[in-house]
Length: 140
Image (cartoon, rainbow, N blue to C red; front, side, top):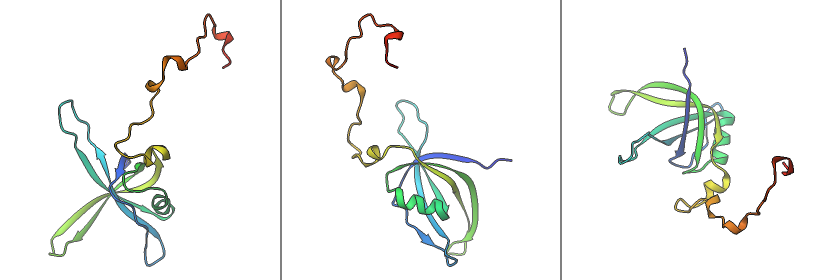
């Protein structure tokens, strides 16, 4: 049987590092993951709760902030508890085993409304004519 989850999404808040009474680092946060959509439909997102422990938690709280794109590999875990009214509840969350950067630091620090760099911004005069060069003439 498999219990493997791979997600890419944006953090909905700055993750905070906490410590258990036994001194184990932990962080809980959520990410927004876009759903597939068809042209003309409104985009929708799912908000997925994530928990990370030990070095993974420390890494996330050190390098990721609200709005950053994060890649997560982990497994789904359920917890049962009683809410303040005594009702039985079940919480679903992803326990992160591996996380990784999905965008460059430059991309993550750019304002959301900025236009990313593109090769289409080049002018035709920015290129040199290779004339009748063959593959043997190229330096790579």
